[in-house]
Length: 262
Length: 176
Image (cartoon, rainbow over all chains, first blue to last red; front, side, top):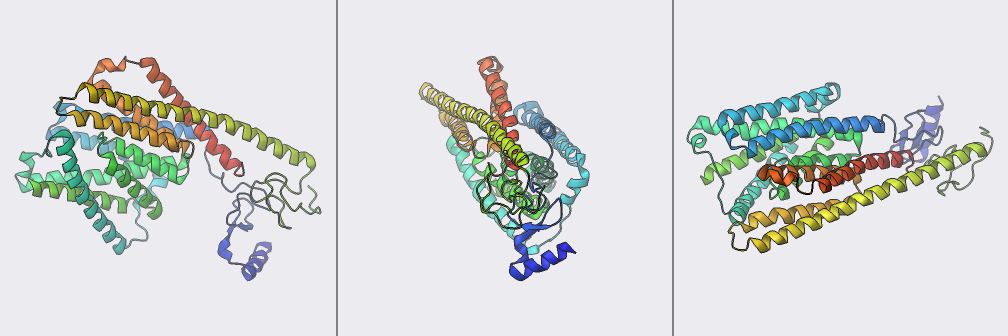
């Protein structure tokens, strides 16, 4: 009763949207209040894990990142693994790691797999931006490779010689990374970091970690903004699917441009 | 608690203006209608949190300085590589990563007081990856400056713990 009376009084005087409900006593308080003026409850520390839980969450995130890093290092730096069967095995291992860690908190993370508020306009906007960005990056990286490393893009002759090979390339370079990197980094890692720190810091950390795991310092100039865009999109839209589509379109455009060049 | 008392016009803890119907300050949580003892306890806790925060900030400052030292180190290495490999046609490939690392550590250092957790976690990950890459290229490099590397990693891990504590204090005492 008191609550309704108070609500009615406030709506007559000011916009109700300037108020929120206290997480402890349920009474109305100003939107920007740090504490409830009625019961004194801090509005920012409800459901926040304590420092020890946070350290455990960081250790778990470090385990995910460490395992992913080891596999990336092996695939990039050990020449014996530069074959198609090994590439498939490595992609499969990365996918399994992402799925396992994502499933650790399935109850919360499954919400990210839903696509509420689907918008076809947004989807096409992301696809358009991804195509433009990928084209710019593809030509810039090609130019940087020639200037800095005196080499052109290396490309598998065997794979691009047949339609099946092209399908394999797009499947392993565009579809698989788009789904499982988003599941791992924007799904598991970002959700984990959001429990440890505030939104912007969680997005910065996950983006930086995503960028440096590609083990190319020259590519950081586009990888960091790319990851930040995906991170903030995941936060705003509360789904990983816009990110997956963006990531897939970006990688696929890059593959197609490389095929055209060769 | 005596609710018949009317609250003061300004909060005794954070000095913001108080409205008539407030039992607690909306900015800092100060109990406006509580007994003097409860109010003093609140102020004491706030002061302790303030001292703790200053201590943790000092540790973050130490981490920031290490980021600057690392940036300087990569610049020096870059210059040495530049001077000793003048005739090498892959000189840019050798030097540019050193300068990129220097720039990254400068950026992380300059933002480390503002966004401590993000910068320190990123810096630690970057430093470890650089060391792994160096070790793969030349395993002898693991032993080179081993104590220095351990000190840096230790300082950064302690920095992460301090950053977590800073966030906790800032959430519990938003007015500090």
